[in-house]
Length: 404
Image 1: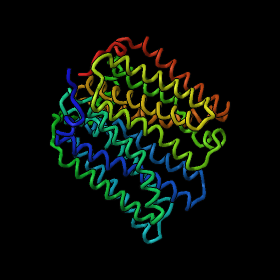
Image 2 (image 1 turned 180 degrees about the vertical axis):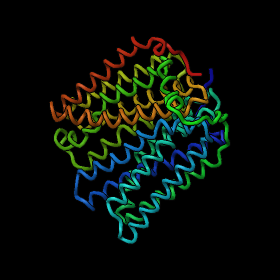
Image 3 (image 1 turned 30 degrees about the horizontal axis):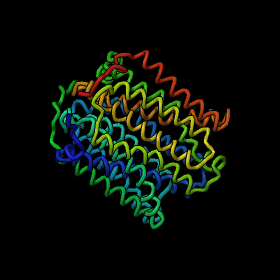
Image 4 (image 1 turned 90 degrees about the vertical axis):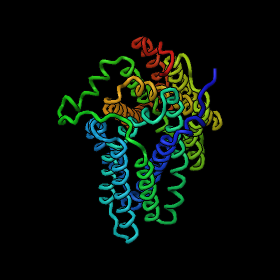
């Protein structure tokens, strides 16, 4: 039996433009994170202000996400994504202008960061809901793998580009980010409108929470999204990488850079494999197996005192997490009717944001209580137990044979 390959995906003009938009947008987010963090610390020398930057981005994203999903289901999704990216470009351009003339303040950065968070609450659900309409169902798994590969590329390359350009000029960094977001908006603007816009009923609590009701009534979607929430919540040990690099592996900043890049490298390898040879059977079980391996690799990471073994564990963590991401993303999209995809994508976005943010918080708190190594081991064991428990709680999800 032949498998559709990544070349099949890239033969679709619409997917090419979608991928280009995601790539430039993800690079913008990674570069601006480096620039904002460094500049805030330069201006304030305060860890509190660094934390506030994350908070002013996180709060608008969480508060507006459900409305963002509702908007994605009643308006043209490509226009929502395009408008958000151009708003983000304008905010970055304002930071560039203020940096070039030397008048930038920390409150300027707070305001722009809040804009980035609010725009993301609308851009991401609409962008995620677009993908199933751009490629045939038979290619969705490969398209999901390749499109998430854009995020991994940006995660690895974005901070390096941001750091290099920022060393030359803060204003130039923000100008580059603005240009990237403008390009992303251009790519998304070229896409056709391929989903049927729902009747534009007024925004009510019922319409806002329709996605929540759908998720609760669909065991496969509920199991998929909640598995990600709890597994990442318990397995967020990569937030402790600076501690492992300095105190356990006794390496410097270069070593920390390698450790941070390792999960992304593993994810990219799996992206390439899944783009050419997608899973064709037992995809539900493959998802659970990937979470179990993620937990076991986390335990190895926590126990390791050898740089090379730690790198291998992190590469495996990134690789199996990517397997889970691709299967979860495809399952959620295929299990959701098109008129609900924006709202369900918004809930998925909320769960992912919460799991990442709270996972880092959980790792930090437990590390403060027990130490970094015990906290990491407990998190890895917890991820394994969650996967085993979810296999029993959601047997239909475990038994999903194939996508599409």
